[in-house]
Amino acid sequence: MSPGWRADAGWTGHWDLPELVRAPISERHRGALVALAEAGMGPRKLADALRGAERWDDVTGEFASRSQTALRGLRRIGARALVPSDEEYPDELTEIDAPPPLLFVRGESLGELRPAVALVGARACTVGAMRFAERLGATFAGAGLVVVSGLARGIDVAAHLGALGAGRTIAVLGTGIDVAYPPEHDDLALRIASNGAVVTEFPPGVGPRAWHFPSRNRIISGLSIAVVVVEAGLRSGALITAGFALDQGREVFACTTGPENPVGSGTRELLKDGARIIVDPEQALADVLDIARAHGFEGVGSASPTSLDGELALVYAATAQPASSDDISATTHLETKRVTTALAELELDGLVECVRGSWRRVER
Image 1: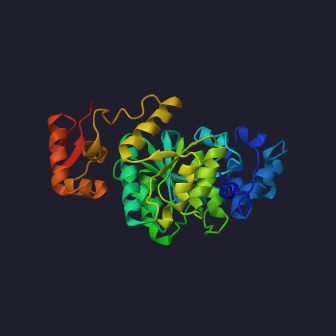
Image 2: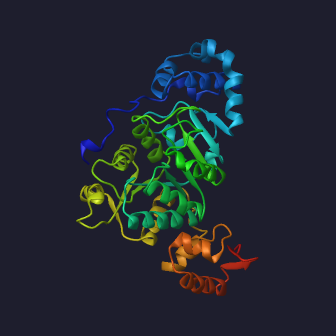
Image 3: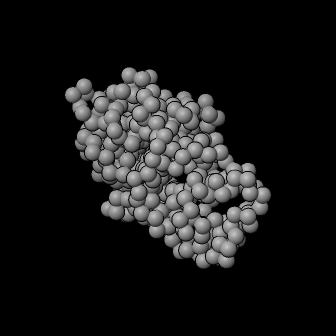
């Protein structure tokens, strides 16, 4: 793919995983690393400081005295800090170029949020692309996949909302763990932390910077077994994510788009250069499930009967959590009458049931 899609400049850079962070860490040293990050030591500098150090004390120094204060601050906002030696730290991230030496998390254990697929695209996207991203998010999440995106306007927010209607999602921030960007997505970030996780390599209080976002994109692709670019122009950050995905050995998918759609010029280039094509959510799900199983996730997809397709699959995906027919209609963008018809058929097949006005799956 085009070298212009690589994030070789303007981000944190490249490094190997320092040997020290593969060893168990005490809470005292963990808090000291957080204090170092809060004092302005970014991921690259922290990785450099850890490289060659024989003991944690060689790195943390006087910041060990701030350890308890730093950890109390994280607990106050419901966050935690991970290093690569922690069991929860994703194996997928240890394998990428420039693994985050310190990862901040709010929400569920990252060890439980696998396998994941990234859904990314333009902020200034078309309405149709947003709807398609939401349907993809619902379809993936309803089948047991975790949807990863960046909490940005446009495709990202649509992917998160679709996933929340059917399952779980991860938001990777280019800001501190307590700073939503854009600010109007603060409530969404809280919802995601309750139905998935919010992740960043930046400590509390850090605001957005231009270089943070390409840096963040390597984590989005790194957490995922595949990256789906829904709609993107040639200058979209989604293409940087696709570039990282290729470097990391991840599969890249791109959605079809009309030749006169300027926002789709980047996705057209991805398809021209060999990205796998997506034409509808069901086909996308089947392809990504194949990848998941090839990675050893044998049980994934079993929550969604393979015999379902079309609208039945969409409606079934939206019942991963109890939902009213109106909620399902909003999630799937299907008319209420068509949702009601699909629910009736699923109920007859013994797949869903209605309890106190909410539809939910029947345990099989």
